[in-house]
Image (cartoon, rainbow, N blue to C red; front, side):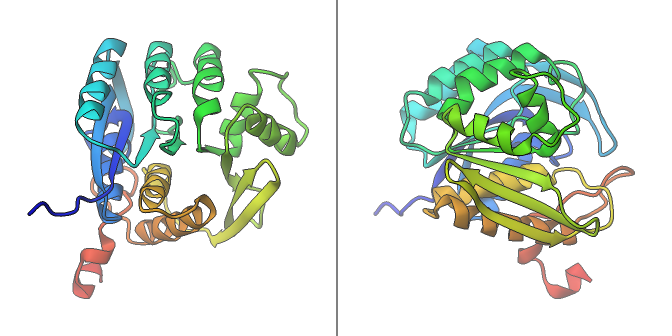
Length: 274
């Protein structure tokens, strides 16, 4: 007798030797939520807990082949798209996900750990804006990253343009925009979820001391897993934030650099967490 399978999530992203960001972090977060992760590698990183030293971008044809073979074999419940590396990768992934319009797509294309080359390219941002954002269920960006997107259609500005920039992203076809680091008390962290009606939810969390690597990846991957498990977007966002805050609270110092969120804190004995 065949057992019922866990929800399957296909993630596109980078491989990280540390397991803090990218594919490895996604798979850990999916597993913590009872999902099985499938992966398509877009880039290979060389780095540790202090920095990423180099990145090798995977050829777009290889990216497409990885995804097509898996999708012809297994039904997926959600897509998660992370760091893409090249305009060609943006194009092939946009073409692939367009064949599955009913499957939710979580787009989290930035990482503060990544080297500067490529990620600051205006052409890459424009490609994501034109090809992927219109197909996106939820786009996760910080306030700084939102401004970087916005500067592909307006001049840089010292004014508070977040509300206008948010609505422009929504108008492009993105169903939900989740902005992290929105204005709040200096002792807190605030995140805001928007859709075409405006603010859907606004959550404040106490800021935790320390420097962390992989919190954003944990957050977006957990949102994808919650959607795969059948939650609606506002509820998925709340649950994912609560999980990420707990993972950060139990973060581990694996090397000499930043702390790594523990996505399996809930599976450890109380003595192990002391």
